[in-house]
Length: 114
Length: 115
Image (cartoon, rainbow over all chains, first blue to last red; front, side):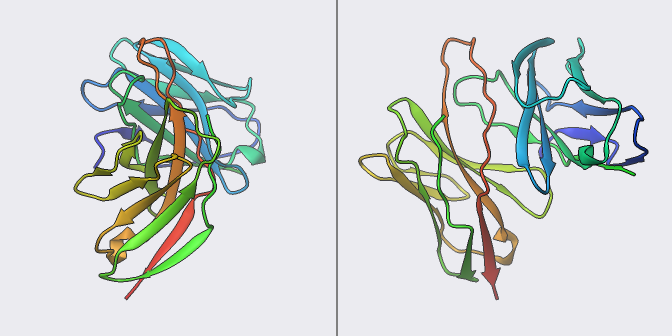
């Protein structure tokens, strides 16, 4: 158990819909990262937050957005869903996000868009 | 960050050492080598990292060549639970507190530990 929690574990929704994925980082960690893992693209970095502020952006679509709240939990919002958005979405956390701190990954949310 | 090259798959007999190679010929002087693994769609798990000296922890050993162009992750006594995809990642560390820390995953090596 990494200490990172993600809800829900599974999500099935229809095209065009909007969903919210939630992540609670390990106690004491200030940075949260979101990754997407699909069969054809592998594990891809989406976005990083540090202490409530966006720190880095990767291959995140404009239809996707995220935020980190004062209690440091984070939400990833996916809208206008397409079939190709079906994937595993992982959240990871680390203490600061620089230096040698390793990232601890949650169990993931499996999103299926039908 | 430098690119890495890993064999797509490897087999290892249970109880034997698993040696997973990684080539990173374009690595720069201040880039670290990290290893993560992913067991069957679970979240990736950190294993070990190093700069130029060999490193060992409770999970594995990391051997980095003197020219730093390649490295080997060693699982000393592989068990069935070590069956996973192993990712070698090279990345730049930032010390100023202003850098980012995303991990760039390649395709990794699928290690199968055989009874």
